[in-house]
Image 1 (cartoon, rainbow, N blue to C red):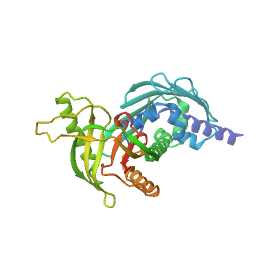
Image 2 (tube, helix red, strand yellow):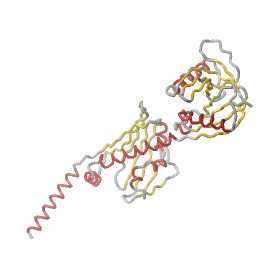
Image 3 (cartoon, rainbow, N blue to C red):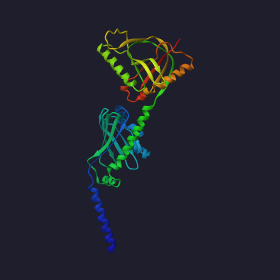
Image 4 (cartoon, one colour):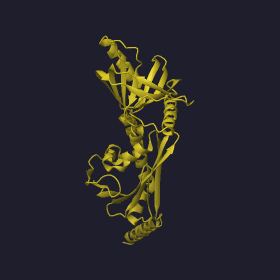
Length: 339
């Protein structure tokens, strides 16, 4: 009997001591993980701000596919939310603040625990965007302290899931950005028109930077002289070596009439006549243009048509600034043919 009392006393001392140890654990936490993703902040921001996108990269759904998610009418922006049920209990998440393309603040309620503040930060860096995902709270109840303690602390309990979520987000984003589609539209008629242009040579490594510089210079000239655009930017290829990726190109912006230029800006006015063309459309990153050109030339040979003396060109039909995912960029290729 005495032995039983001693055991009980020891157990009580152990329990009291354990409870005391749990009770003195930190009353707040701030868990954060960051990852640099080679994508525009706008694209990543748009992916995260809409809760319907979370299923594709959520680390918790990956671990427990039986989680049941419910969406209200609003799933994006301030006031949006979603809820879930699982074997671990119910939960809700709602967005409380948004700073466009910069940060998102959310509130998470899990079971009967006090709500936690979840936050996202998007910072432009040389390699792309540094995405930071964090969760913090200044109120940690006893039971949560206990769960955290037996799992090695709050950071160890939640941090690995955040790391996995960011890894999946990175992979999903890269996959999405790499998609492209080439469509041979067939023989069409191009209506022709005037354009202001500058000519330079380039290669695969500097072509994007060269184009940006050329278009910027033409845009400044047009603004200075109050000349309106009459269409989307284009590139006329004076010479194209598909073997080594070098080109001589005229980057231009369409105008509604012939422009007489008298200054030394280096900007010239050109004209593409009305002509029959083989039209091809690329939907995807401009880095896939070589594939689209290769398919176009192959098709031209298959239908036994020859290029005319009019130089081939491409038109960039939407503004990348409005489409953060390169998979949504649209380029039309025109190869003038002999009639």
